[in-house]
Structures are given as C-alpha cells and as structure tokens.
Amino acid sequence: MDDEMRMLLFGPPGSGKGTQAAVLATELAVPAISTGDMLREAVAAGTPLGQRVESIMLGGQLVDDATMADVVRGRLQAADAGEGFVLDGYPRTLPQARELDDILEEGDCELDHVVVLEVPEEELVERTLRRGRADDSAEVVRHRLREYRNKTEPLIGYYRERHLLRAVDGHQPVAAVTADVLAAVGRGA
Ligand code: AMP
Image 1 (tube, protein in one colour):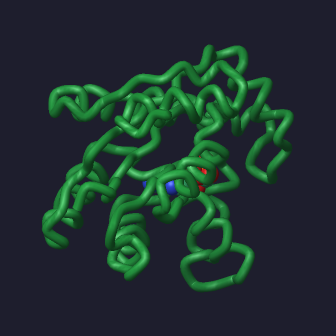
Image 2 (cartoon, protein in one colour):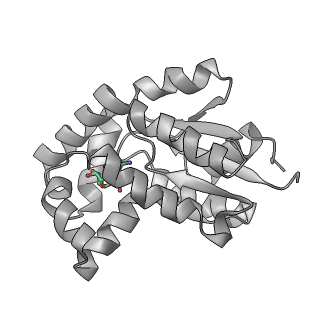
C-alpha cells in the first residue's frame, strides 16, 4: 500500500532524532519506535532486561547486538507496526543492520528511507549537555559520540549503496527539519 512508510532516523546523540521521530511518526501516522526509550522504560520498571542494561547505558556503551535483536524483533512484530514505523536508535552496528534486514524480510517488507540528520559537532555536545539526562554527563556524551562515529556512522555507507539514504540539515528549527525530512521522503507539502 502506498501509505506504508518504514523509515530509519539516524544521527549522532544530540542531533534531535528523538524529537523528530515523534513528530514525523504523527505526520506519517505510524508509530515512533525508539530503542533508547524502550531500554529506559525497562530500567525504570526494573525488568530483567532493564537490570542487565542499566550500567551499560549509564556508561554510554552499546548494549550487545543479540539483546537488541530480541528487543527490536518483538516490537516490529507488534500489530501497530504493520504499516510502517519511524525507527530511532536502531540499528547502531553493521550486525544490527543485517539483523534488521532479516526481521523485515521475515515480515515480507523492506525499508523505504534512511534519513540522516547532520549537525555540527560543537552543537551536539552543547545540546546534549543541556538535555541533562542521567547518561548525559560530559564524559559519557563524548563516549557516546565516539561509539556513534566508530560503529554507527559506517552504516551510512551501507544504506547509501542501497540508494536509501537521504541527508537532512539538522541544524535548523524543529519544524524546518521536519519539513525537509518529509520532502526528502516524498511526503512534502
Ligand atoms: P538513545 O536514546 O538512542 O541515545 O539510547 C540510549 C542508550 O541506550 C545508548 O547509549 C545505548 O546504551 C542504548 N541503546 C539504544 N539503542 C541501542 C542499540 N540499537 N544498540 C545498542 N545500544 C543501544
């Protein structure tokens, strides 16, 4: 169906991904799925998953791929994700990208767009520190940025080769970024 929309939102920590995922999901009438939010909820609820990942998250490290595969597979198989989703925070490694391909293939569907929000480095650190979450101390922020550069940025090439990549200037007011993303995925005004 033409209204279906399976979108990944990429960008370094502090690029405004979470905010955009929520707004875009509303605009596109699909759920926003944030693996960071799902893990934070598990930590807050004290589930076995939450207990396992809490210290990893506080250190700004990545949770292992096998754990993340379980989290994402279960969520993408839920009924509300049947016609699409805006996925924020997954995949973050090449094995995760391959896992996502498998999950989607099992459901007989595929990605439509991979959007990367581009924001200058100085702005990222400042924005993240201003947000003030538990895992947002200066040292942890720098570690998360390193993880992004080393492990997640290589995925941009993976998706560019498949002609799925759309780069958007994330250094603009929220509404302008949203408008540019919608235009980039063919849903502009
Ligand atoms: P986020 O809100 O997307 O920045 O995620 C917060 C934290 O959750 C990250 O710093 C990681 O510790 C963990 N996390 C979220 N998504 C993933 C993922 N796809 N792979 C590994 N760790 C993740």
